[in-house]
Image (cartoon, rainbow, N blue to C red; front, side):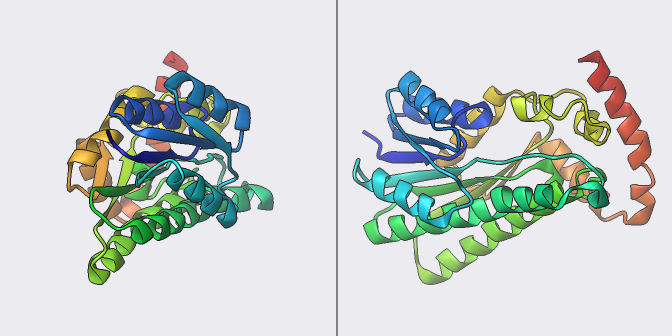
Length: 264
């Protein structure tokens, strides 16, 4: 029997599917979400438990960690909760900038810290913290500047935290998953916004099932950074080296995304 797993943002999308797969692997899953009813629905579907958690609150993560270890050894923590707003950087209201940074970056930091504290106290092996990044962590994404900045930071934080853990001899494996555009409620809710078109530039949108399966498979892997699909990750990294000349293609990509988004 596996131990306990915590999944933030488990009320829908990637989080719900990740929770299902972790339960299928034998983990007792604590599903958390700002929407407590949605978290409870996920928990009911998988035979787990739930908590209402605002990931912007570090103490809320600590409460979740304490609740998890009451149920058994905490072995997996997935920082999945995230928000997306698509505007040019100067068009965001201040509260949208703050929301994205607080949820996408600070939420990951607070969750990772709570997980590491709880896991270090327990000791043992086979412990994993998985953070949800984005393909936008690898390359400039005009129209998603604030969102992309938070995901760049998640990538850097995850890798740096892994270095700290290794230097301290703490056997916790850090992972970051960077999916391309995916067909989820979060992206569909932004589909009316002109700047969101760049999300649809990939040949096809990923499904929540695909992302969840790849995320949970990291428990059997030593891979720290996973791009989905991998070829897009390589292309994004290469584009990031191109500087301003590559950025001149962003308008072409946006129009391409508009056409693909319109086809649905």
